[in-house]
Length: 108
Image (tube, rainbow, N blue to C red):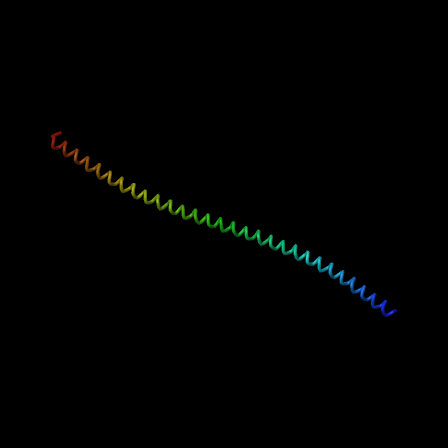
């Protein structure tokens, strides 16, 4: 009977060790799950930051393009306004010459 009792003690000891190991495995599994959740949360924050950076970059680029287009339009209208002004000055000079000639012909 002594051998049977000895074997039973060994079996109980092994079972206790297995339970301890299962507890450790559960604890490690829980730690790994928390670490994975934290890693996912960190990646999500990083992704959000990158998306925001890209959004800001795209807005800045759009703003720069809009400013360039506004400047191009301003220059075009300035050029047109100068052409109109120049044409009006020519017409005014022609009108002045016409009036002076008419006055000279009228003997004034």
